[in-house]
Length: 529
Image 1 (cartoon, one colour):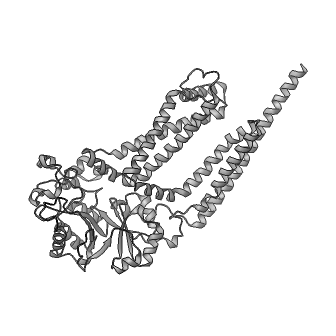
Image 2: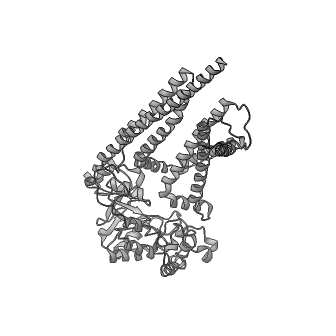
């Protein structure tokens, strides 16, 4: 490297890392700076994990936005804000880590400025605080992270082997430069232990998508979660008509009871998020949905909010005709949905959200009102997938669905042959065990391709999703690999890595030998003179 270019590079590296653009202190405290390097390394690792977590949780961003809207009564895409924050912290700490490694490579002493030290501590504390909050308020998401690690483990293995191979350059350099035998022994044993661990970690990897192509199950059927909420306002007739276009098998929705006993479709406890109630009944905007009569509910517009808030950043993709239809959507009644289901031969599954106010006229009778509405419709009773979320009896013609995991024998005795479980709360082994007992498994809510692909490989029967239009186009999982191919790649990567480490050690040994010989030769000449 030309001397001038090296000088400019060194100025940039030391300037950003130590905020010293002219000269470092003559004698920086090496032990203290090394401790801060370890702190930076840990912080960088934490930020990488945190950034990975937010990528893995992409599937459930809509749940987070809805939850925070219920708390703050203000719609913002909080998930993107937090993702940007995670990406910023990750980029900042990664940059500092790269600069620190450049110091080592150039033989420069470390000197981290106090501003960067404070920023590192604040970043790490912020990440740990958010982790604790999620653990307390959103603890089921840790199951999603565990699931994503299982899926991405083979790629993590390859990346970790590549990283440890690159690090060999610095390890070998410090090994040959050090004159302390104990340090050399500890360094070499630690590094070799890590390398051996990474070389054989695939023995413990169990990824559902490492599977023979012949054993890959059929594509899971699709249930439209509140219809097709990425393409139309949720729980409206337009949304369920879009579900039909996606070739979904089932309409999934939420049913509530109006004050005068009409079952209608609505997920939230209030109309605030998905209607224009602030314009029609501003004084009652935060009242429970069941406190309104059906005549009052029909006055609300249930579609304009979709174009205004654009909850999935998809409204721009709608044609002008579709946007016009969306603005004219009203709150849908259960009777209207049942008619559409009968006409299109779709199954219907719903959560019955009973009134919470004891003064409600149908507080103890909501179950009967819903059953009566179904029986009075023309729908084939076999198309009703009934979730028994109360202890009332179920009409014999309805297909019972259970929202929890029970022993297959118990389910069979209860004549329940479908279970409805959150996607991260059931393993592939449990899905296969239920399948052997002729019990189908539906999981909710699946929005990302990698989650859908993982469940496909696990042979799940159906998924509830907001993204039916995306999954409709998928012909195969986004990735799957036969165990034999994975074994070949695993062994090849390990062998190449091992040979590269040997080559790096040889190069560093040669450099150290040449450097030692030059110094010895120089000392000899000085002695002669």
